[in-house]
Length: 269
Ligand SMILES: Nc1ncnc2c1ncn2[C@@H]1O[C@H](COP(=O)(O)OP(=O)(O)O)[C@@H](O)[C@H]1O
Ligand SMILES: [Mg+2]
Image 1 (cartoon, rainbow, N blue to C red):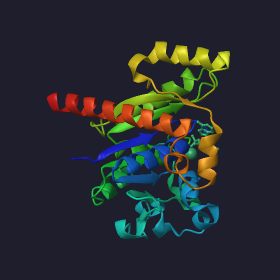
Image 2: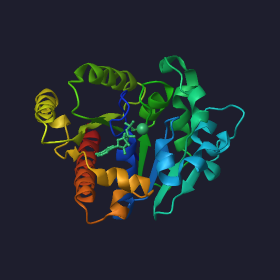
Image 3: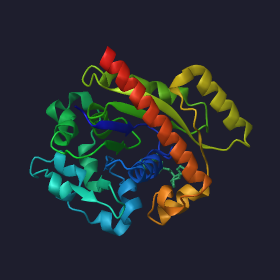
Image 4: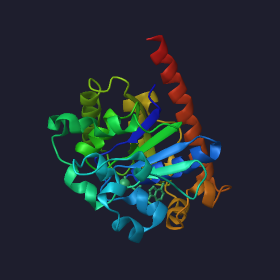
């Protein structure tokens, strides 16, 4: 059976994909789950959040996700899956070496579309896998969707970005025939400032358009998230009693609840 695997997708940058993976990964690990974070973005933000930029920039292809796409490398789970300083939290790192593999028109990439899904078949021992995607819908995001059974779309309420969301939905629908287990876990409203009328309006519109597909938990714009990352710790570990940590915990609970409901529906179907 597929380990519950969630990819975080949006073709926009700066919408909190990496931040969500980082903080949720810490939270779920603290909760007792064995969590694998996968950095599928050539920008390597998630990896840098854990280990700093110097350590990540110098990685060789065989130590990073690039290895799974590179015919000259042997993609070995022993080399790629690295424990972090946090109990039960491991990571597959990425850096700029991945960029040349992140090609457009991913549906024409032959077997490379399934590189991540095939690799993960040989990576046992995790309860949950979170995949951080780049700000485009090229081969890395496509691989992430074909290796996942759930997708989360982080959406900041900055502008009425339904146009952008439509493209994301189309990509998910295109991926579904190739990965029938894939389901939308939810739209995540993130970086919200409830003092701003525009943010409140955008949230209302999203909920009207997408109903229950929008998580009830909203992740606010809060410096604690940034500060924790700059200290290389998920907020669950950096400031466990903070408001920010409790929001991530609420979101984590909502995600687990939705996953168990969708899993049950899948079993009945
Ligand atoms: N809820 C939040 N509150 C404050 N800053 C945030 C929040 N979410 C993300 N950020 C910050 O915004 C920037 C962009 O977020 P990031 O997760 O890197 O976006 P993406 O991965 O979608 O490009 C980062 O500096 C990150 O720390
Ligand atoms: Mg990112």
